[in-house]
Length: 332
Image (cartoon, rainbow, N blue to C red; front, side, top):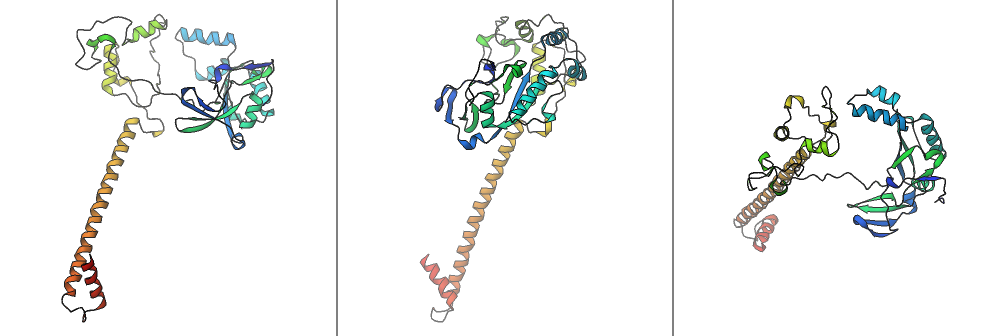
């Protein structure tokens, strides 16, 4: 690994530091040194470039006014400097990173580059280790990456160095705090009534969330816009209607379109499929068990018949197969 110098920009927010070289680390991580075969693996990293300050300020002002920027204008007028992107691309390629044309976004804010782990260590001044988390083992960086200032000044983040980090869903149903707003019908019947209805206390209403983020005076309604919400499953119609009613929002189901991206199964569909598969597997096991019992029954029937046939002839006069069947039956 190359020695760090004062002319490098360190990206502390791009990783969560791992304080140990090997052994148990915080958050349940098990760390081991990376072997030579792990350094031959390739990783794809994401280099995020910032917009020039004046361009970012202009875009944020448009958003604050509720204006919509077409995609073509977004790529043309609100983009990172091409010279910054080209300088970074040239440096990465000289370091041995593979970058194709499609790996660079039209607005130059995103560059995806692939290289062996050993080269990433050397180029970004990171120490790569093996991290086991949740039953899976990954090659990941222990420390924050860095770039030479001349090519890294416009870079704001380097992603992909710790692939064990994943987004987790933390939402869960819970009763309102101290029975607040029970009248909204958010909890089971055992909760006390009437509701205290204390403002700015859980459960929060939409207006209170807007106020908390100083967004209640924007005069932005979303009128005429199509807003996409990416979620792991479809909400039920009853939940949507209940949410609108409790927040006094004049919305109805005709304005909602549910789109299944790439035909993926929702968690509920996967659970039903697992349940169906388990039921089918149980039926197959039951059928196999019944079939086994039937085979055994037929075998005993056959033996009984053979035994009865053997009684027709004395053992000395019967055929060998009859004697064998008779002997088997008696032994059994």
